[in-house]
Length: 367
Ligand SMILES: Cc1ncc(COP(=O)(O)O)c(C=O)c1O
Image (cartoon, rainbow, N blue to C red):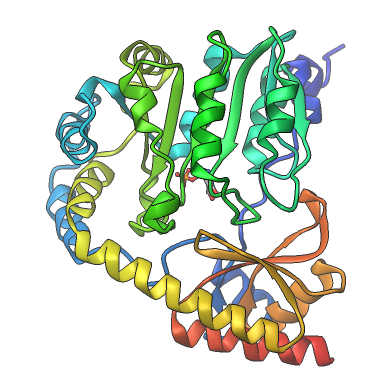
């Protein structure tokens, strides 16, 4: 008799729940018969990509009959100049998400421990589940990574540590000096993955100087992405910065052409467009201030955020409020799965989108 396919799959997969992405605008509009909805559910840049990135993408388009440069030479050179770290310390990924999966594939297996915060980006838990590693999940303290608690949870079996700074879905970040102390004290056999997807949104004075540890060849992989402030989420491109031997391992397991040519060209152009990055950060700062004040005036409590989204306690089941907002054309993210049943994660949008969000939330909470 044929065995069910599920029985043939790796046993770790039975507990794996697929990632739930933010609902696409088109799907919501079809479902609710509405138009002009706004998506504040996936922490994308509401201003869109840099015009220079679009131009570079258009030029690259005419060359898509060729395979991309599997080594990403031009972009790695540009990143090297930008961050003052040698080019062989950079690895490109099909989104930084791919690098999270690959680092798990390299280092984790049954019996290994992987350490992360319980309410951190869900992909860390998925990577742990996929590889059969033992999950060591330390609760956040006051919505923030508890570095002392995490340090106490390190054991000789700890192979990987995932740390998001700022964290998703809370938007909080740790004190930069405390993080540097944590990195300096990490056991030599554990690899730390510092996920800085929202790095460029952080005020410069609270950004940790993690690349210093990479230059010292510590076992640290810093992850950054072009999906957030650079506005290229749909092209799927992120990168890792780590000591060359760690990057070499990632290069061994990644697909030969994991990052397409359009993404590489657009990312290199986006990296050079400091004006677009600055304008995006300024718009985000203004939007954060506006939303924080409006929510406060409504009597709602938010968590102070260093990123492009806010975690907001709406005092009612988040799923119900999300549904009510969807009907009013505002797509946000409920975060019950993270253990925040009455919170919503709301991406900071354009001024008009933020106003629409506030109006819809007022109406939803009145209904
Ligand atoms: C903390 C964090 N890390 C990584 C990612 C993955 O980003 P990407 O794969 O688009 O680079 C996200 C996306 O939301 C995130 O919030």
